[in-house]
Length: 103
Image (cartoon, rainbow, N blue to C red):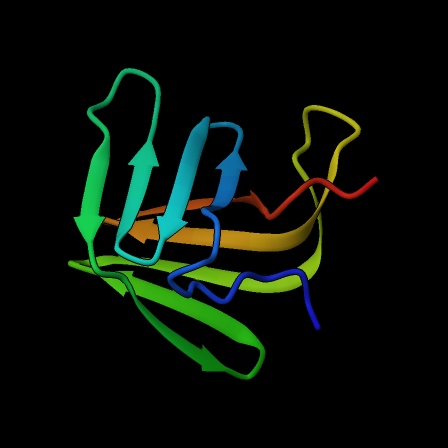
């Protein structure tokens, strides 16, 4: 089974991050939270998960987060992650990595 989290009541938070620009994302069963330096955090309730063609898509009030199980480098360190993540919010597209670092 892929390293992607199925967000159930017992599941931990799924996290993702990006650089240039820097951002952090947390997905929990009951909320999405996007943080970017110098900007207010965005917290949206009740993300809906849909899975199609191997892509996990979370949506909540105008934000879309796509998670693809494919190795990803954060571009700033030697860390590798199991997932590629794309966040779409208010006309912006943020790309980064997600899941627990590999190795």
